[in-house]
Length: 229
Ligand SMILES: [Zn+2]
Image 1 (tube, helix red, strand yellow):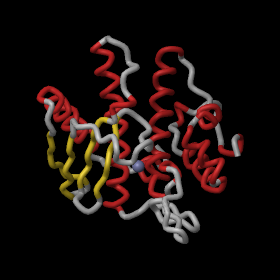
Image 2: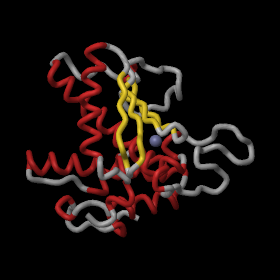
Image 3: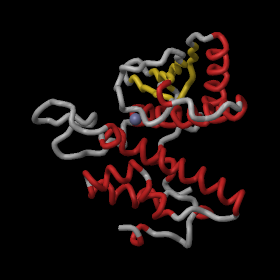
Image 4: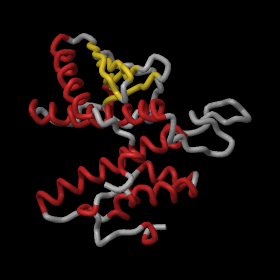
């Protein structure tokens, strides 16, 4: 799948980690208490904590979905916790709700695993002039950049978008035998919109990397970056 692995950085142990996370989440939910387990990723022990207590203050307003995750690169820990204010519009069907929850949980885990891989492989940190990787301005030392624009988020977020596109394309292909138009997807993505507005050079890089990493069967008319850039 082209350069897929090198950019999105999901560990090869991903499937196993997801199974354990799912199990742990279910137990945690049932007993309404936290659960954790340790797993090996790239031969390094990593702890995954499923927290049932929403943390509404940490990084207020920064969450992109109903779950929030955190990668602690000193303790080698991933914590996933609910950001409850964003849930609630999934209707009353318990089975459907659970499916939505699982999907969101999976995407959050994907994202945090990508951060873990950045640390473990010590790479993929993009560099924006004047800012450190966490988005602090080097001059003023005040919080400057929006979450999605921080260098540390560049490859993990790009990986999230690639996953989102592939899942959408797979679903559409299955139900309607059609695939989405890549340029429309990119133009509607908040991540790409933010990049385009603030850092056009990074946006170009993201578009190129995105297109290179879409598997052939999900490419709409052999799409190339030149059609968008
Ligand atoms: Zn992130």
